[in-house]
Image 1 (spheres, rainbow, N blue to C red):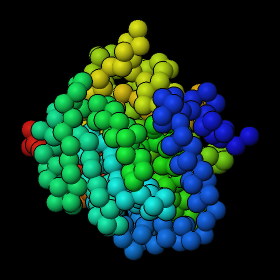
Image 2: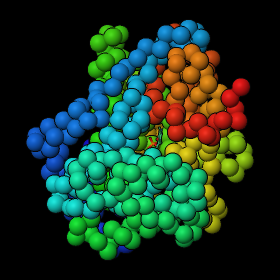
Image 3: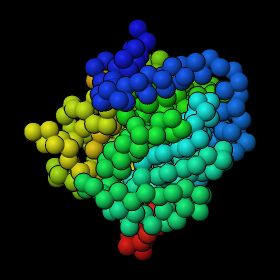
Image 4: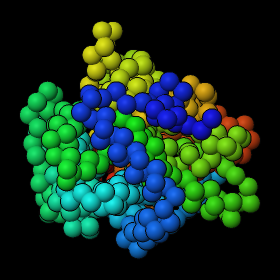
Length: 393
Ligand SMILES: *Cc1c(COP(=O)(O)O)cnc(C)c1O
């Protein structure tokens, strides 16, 4: 059976747990998305923007000095940080904006936490000449002022959200409210492999270009497949983007790295696959951080892009069937990972990405014989210079 099934379930995870008013919208979207999958013109258009605008294919780079430092690992970096706007998120927003255009929508909305998805959405909307409204919690607007300026420069309206904890999950609720009210002309772009069906599949399919390219590039360079794939997991889109093309390559082991924040034994982390239970968040059934009576716990990570209490349903499924393994890295370890890649390779990664880099040292100790690994370098670190200022000697 191919997954997800008709209701969008990945073996018990996923689905669409939404009010009746949203059901029809999601079914429409699903129909269009399905028809576009075999639409050659759509595929050509998407490929064109990925290539000519975003800068694909990205480089698969053999990190020689980092590998020498790690001794047991031959490390390749999939350089999504070299894309326009500096991260993998643009793959998805370009794809969804093209779907919106096909549906005849003229207005794009999105929620954003750290502002990275907001910037990628505003960028794609500007490119296509579409109106763009971004919902953002007032707490995040203060913390991420630079990205707010970027979105406004790109022509987007940033709407402050003052309800709840005034962060990402409240912004998402407001965006959904807007969508229901303005569905005639409005398309809602979700930023990760989360949310109700068909979003997790749609986002995964737009990001899967990462793994398709990496697989081909690795085969050309090494004449075999890698032993490991490694990627950080917030909602899980860069990880699923890398993993998906390797699903059937049984001997290729996949490792997703969640944010352990101050530590898994504290309440301040963002590791629902390690420490969460099963529940429903933002229309989808998956692992999530919740209290015993089902209240969603606010997540913490030094990396704003990993700071989400849920995770995409397909990752919960990969974990359940044992296809991927999920580990975690603390704030402190991630900062060391950021420094390590900077000095060994001259590449300053995003703090999110630094979680995957940091795990390399643990993986290096785990492997017995020399092994090869592809790391998804999901984004560049310029945006994090303020956050890590106190740690630079
Ligand atoms: C947003 C972001 C992430 C986390 O999102 P995923 O959906 O888990 O990929 C990771 N890295 C960077 C650079 C990001 O901007």
